Image (tube, rainbow, N blue to C red; front, side, top):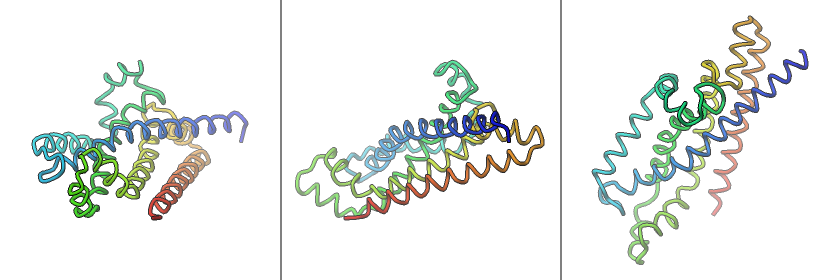
Amino acid sequence: MSSAMLNLILEATLATLYMVAVSGLIAAILGIPLGVMLYVTRPRQILAQPMLQGVLGVITNIGRSVPFIILMVAIIPFTRVLVGSSIGTNAAVVPLTIAAIPFIARLVEGALNEISPGLVEAAQSMGATPWQIITKVLLPEARGGIFTALTVTIVTLVSYSAMAGAVGGGGLGDLGIRYGYNRFNPTIMLITVAILVVMVQGFQSLGDYLVRKSDHK
């Protein structure tokens, strides 16, 4: 294999890692608070707002129900406004982030569901404010579940980034299509798949480690 091809593989790998890292970080910053809001605004919760919870739930469900490839095409005008282009790694970050936010939110909401209501009631009986309950009770108790949610999201983003590459998003997906599939080069296809598998395994192992650490009391 030529050095030029090795450089292309390295650049594609770094582009995929960039897309996953940036979209994952932004999605976590926005998705975790959204998941918390979905939980605490339920009826009989500490910030019960059924109407607000219903609106947030509908928005989240719509975000989760749109197939990623359709989402990429549908928000092309929005992507152009944000990054000035609809192709390339920076452009791919936009739909990746939008797809990941509701995904994280629902997983975080699920993690919070596992917390015993007695812990919240005990905090309320001691005069804790809703903010204190969220930051001192809910988030620490759900830490393991939140790490699991982030791990699942990152792994999903790896596969989404490969899909984005097939339509001009760059990264390993683009490399596999252009230099593997279109040029009938199965070696490049296998290398691309192997790198993606290693990437997923690495993220999963790191996530499992963080979950184990967070469970140590």
